[in-house]
Image (cartoon, rainbow, N blue to C red; front, side, top):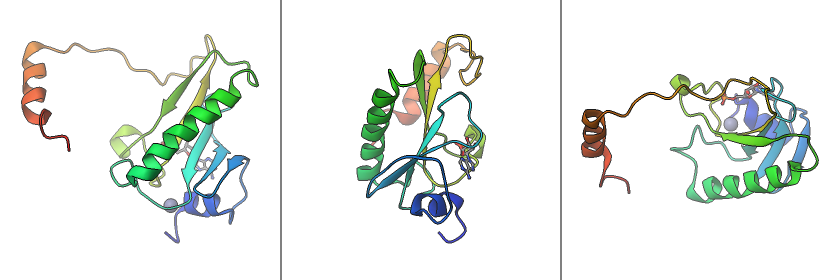
Length: 137
Ligand code: AMP
Ligand code: ZN
């Protein structure tokens, strides 16, 4: 994708604060970090989102997420991580090139990326089960 900024960053055409690179991915620091150490896993191939990314790269991106947060543990003074992956504008996706956020969390960092729990009513539970169960391929 010639006009995709993450394609250009992943390819090294635009400079980035790169933590790691291999044949499939570049891991960079987010320019607008939620917290200290917020990183992004970018595949070098363009896919818009999780629904489109190849099974192989989807799997490899989670294995890489594990490697990066495992390495960060002990190197950064964080107390946990959110591994976040947004799909679609309604979900907060702003760059439409599949990517995985690695967000180190610190006690009382108030990064505000968690949700307020709602209530799963019996009616909604049954409705959703009827719509989705048995149709995941
Ligand atoms: P999302 O909202 O899930 O699409 O995430 C996009 C992320 O990319 C945001 O956290 C931005 O701060 C980050 N971002 C956008 N442009 C750049 C860039 N040129 N270099 C590094 N991070 C970027
Ligand atoms: Zn792209």
